Length: 123
Length: 201
Ligand SMILES: [Mg+2]
Image (cartoon, each protein chain N blue to C red):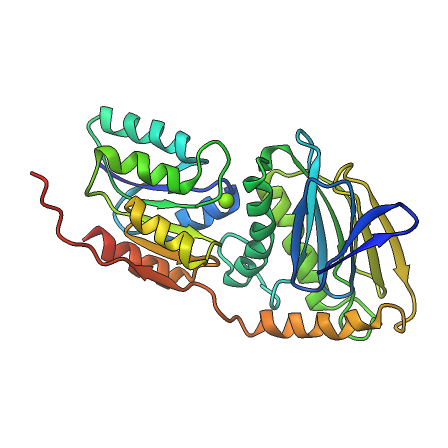
């Protein structure tokens, strides 16, 4: 079983993103911050399943999205991470790229865009 | 936004213009005027600070709900920008309470209309979905409102503006902001980063 991780501190946005990517052949797992996501990802992997993609917000309490990517990428160079955020500053986007993100999408997302980017990243 | 010294309270006041958002830990007032738009005041109850933002959903979203409506996404993002500032300052949406004002009728204030009803439906669904308690709200109706928010205490003082000469500069700016949001510009942009092949076997 493969999972798409949807990581955002907003339950509304998590549900909305999960709804948008639900038919792409993966199970969806939601997490409310970076630390919560890392825990859930290791639980998924310890059960013999895997994560195909992470869709991650930047501004979250406990562990923000950039810190999450850095931590996640330490042990996993291959699974793509897509940032989905209100942040649009060039410096912030560079920071995400350096941390190892595969892409950066600015909220509000258009469902068709999100779907096609996710499909492209999961190939 | 402009900052000035409020003579009555002896504190700084920040006058928020349509489309803006602002959060601060300073003991001050955040002040603005709204007609058709809504003003959302968020208060972090643990850290005792807060902020205010303008919200408008660019249209009516019929039978959809806020999860599936693309229009609602614009409203959600306007609040997200404020929430991002609160989170950057150490806040957590689990500790937030909300107060909401505005969504006056847009048809020159005579009767309830679709846009006003749509704003109200949106904001109620949003805060239910976010599990953020709404402590007070004053929505709909035919008049504009001037809101004084104390981010240090979460208190709101409200003044009803019954005549259009008062704070009339806001009428024009609000209309410009609404037109901007209705044109739906600059959203959903994305970049996919180019990567060298990873060869670390
Ligand atoms: Mg966030």
